[in-house]
Image (cartoon, rainbow, N blue to C red; front, side, top):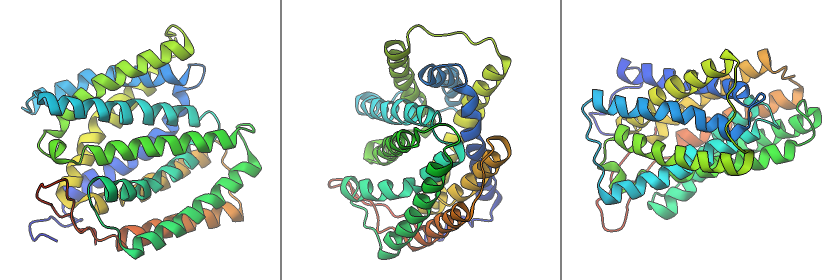
Length: 317
């Protein structure tokens, strides 16, 4: 690891690390309030309709240029469609069928498609320990899903919830890998996110109108409070913190905050969604967390290589 890389205990690393993990752990539960009586697609739209101008304001306040150039705008379109449209549409619809804690646990396996896509798109090699840890984590998640299937507290469409969650994972992973190419690394992260949200929210509106009809106007203040929390705290605050952590300590170490996210999400699901623990669920959660630790500690990045561009390193142990 580069000697200039700060320690995990350094305040500029530890504070955003814990903050993003805790906030994202809570957002899975808050989403359940956005799909209560409101079509999920319009819930996604309202979230990013509010988040988009806030992200532009953040870019202006921090002095970041909003000019991306043609290649940058094309990248923003891709990230917007994958991250702020596809990913969130899949997630919001998935939470109609399975509890938010389970969706969060499944999303903790984002590192698996990340590694696969990075191998083929960016040339990053994966170590055997990462494969072993991922396999252990997948077994744990399968046990949790079997428990969910048996209890099915939200109806009998658990299978559909699982499929939708996998779709969200793949969309998020694609966005993660695409933004790490040469073009993305040269752009201010906040500016890229702002323009990505523009394209994402346009796609969200079109999808929502076609599939759910005209936009509803919820009267419950809880909906709008939750929307504001997800838009400002869960998006505008956390996404820049997250990607800055990736640049500070590397993607591998940053991914450890998924452990914090999972713990917070499962705690909230237990307290507020009547999630019932069984021996199967406890064993599955333990295996999932153990597998994530093994995978993240074992994955030693050999560098990304895009075309003929120079490679760059990020260390993960």
